[in-house]
Amino acid sequence: MEALFSLVVGVLTASGIYLLLRGRTFPVIVGLALLGYAVNLFLFSTGGLHTHAAAVIGESINPADPLPQALVLTAIVIGFAMTAFVVILAIRARSELGSDHVDGQQGESGDDK
Amino acid sequence: MIQHLIILPILIPMIGAVALVLASQARDSRRRQLSIALCVAQVLISAWLLSKAASGEMLFYALGNWQAPFGIVLMLDRLSALMLTLTSVLALGCVLFACAGEDARGSNFHGLFQLQLMGLNGAFLTGDLFNLFVFFEILLLASYALLMHGGGKDRIGAGLHYVILNLAGSALFLVALGVLYGATGTLNMADMARRVAVMDGDQAALVTAGALLLIVVFSLKAALLPLYFWLPRTYAAAPAPVAALFAIMTKVGLYAILRVQSLIFVDTPAAEAITTWLWWSGLATITLAGIGVLAARDLRNLVAYLVLVSVGTLLAGKALGSTEAVGALLYYLPHTTLACGALYLIAELISQQRGKAGTRLVRSRRLYQRHLLGGMFLIAAVAVAGLPPLAGALGKLLLMQAAEGAARLWLWPLLLLAGLSSLIAMSRAGSVFFWASHKGQVDSGRVMRPQLAGVLWLLASAPLLVGFAGPVSNYARDTAEQLAEPQVVVNRLLGELPAPQFGRLTTDEEESP
View (tube, each protein chain N blue to C red):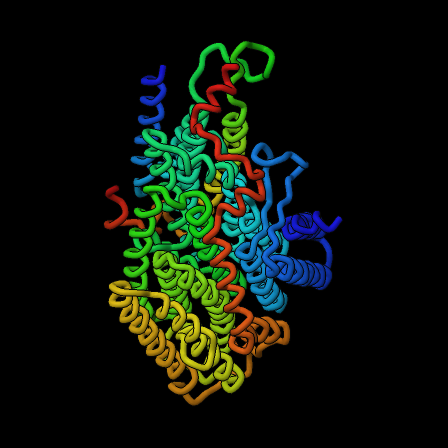
């Protein structure tokens, strides 16, 4: 399970970073979202990976560490709000700057990305 | 009752922000009065906390009475009190300035401003790493909106970069927190310090990785060399009162570095790597920012590079590591923050009276109130370049005295050259603005009374910090000494128990009783 989990986190992070480095705002936002997923999964695993561990104390012999779940919840909420914000910002930038290139340029220099 | 006062710097702006947002239909004057009143209240509270902390007392506040290390604690020591006071003083000047009309260009300026103050105050008070992240997010969210207050091409463009960079930074912050939690099983700073101190083997390596990741994130906020390229454009695009408040945003990064390094990662392998990194990139920041100051063709850009020079100076000072150096940088910090803030406000006043030319360093028409503006510009320039009569010179002197041996060879020339280039750039800017003008002048853009009050409030700090140099530098030195004894914090908060002889083990035991 550890290998699969770390593979998933790794692939998500790698794709996130690749997209983050693109020239247009849309891939960048998708990249940020993927990076957020990777981070949330990673946080989730910091309490240790267990099977059959209930989140509530008393429900099973080995309760799971509750703190990472609280952290992930906070991180998800913040990440959600930020994604919404950055989407609106990108739309606004598209209309104000006349281009969705992150440098605000379009044409020869910006178009071939 | 009295022990609850420590949470007021977070509660006042939070409730104020909500009230201001709800009252968005109220008249402008009402909202301005409320906003100013909130800022004054914060100045008073933080001054009271400062006087409390000055006696060497440490205040802890367990939120919801959940005892540390299980609940979140707020802690107030000399360093947090200093930063709180600095924030509230700077904020009052910015709000006064904004009341002249800048706030009416977009919606909810004052509400967002208070929200940002809440984030800043919270970040300075919290004693929990994850809580630090939350407050960072609050202050960043407010700063995104404030940065784009009023709209416009430049702001949106700069804002997009700023937001995306900081989102990536937040992701990294979370990864660092995850690594540290995984290795130590706690998020309370004092508890983590205790566990890190007795850790070895693989767990220690994990802690090192987490610590270095944290420092990367804080360096991004503090704008150290490879991570500062977002700053000049962002700060130059921001509305003046917001840019002035942003002068403290880089110091939040510095504060966080100081806090985690002096409390948690004291004698770990990470500490050495962090110091080396801070030293060299601090020096490189001073160098490049010094060149940037000379190359800037717009006053706002110029001030942004001056902010960077001060960041480099402060972090290189931090890397010196000795108590004297930390004391010196804490003396230098309020001065440079307030001077840079005041300069942003003055730049706005200058651009008001220059019409199209704005703050670009080109010949333009004569300023309408050139004596008033020239006088203020002169004081701010002397302050920010670190010339003798004002506190900047004292701060730099203390810092240079604290450097020893080979560090002197590096720090002295770079610091003095950066000061020289600031001086050259500021005098060049001043002569363009006030002397090299065409004949005509236009009777518009008069300095309004709230604007003047805001600038003078910030500028007054420069002579005051010299006048009270004795008490202030004593306080800074005491702060440095307090920071050098992290064990006291740990013992005060968690009791004088023998350090637990486990790292990861406890959490495993808790999970499988």
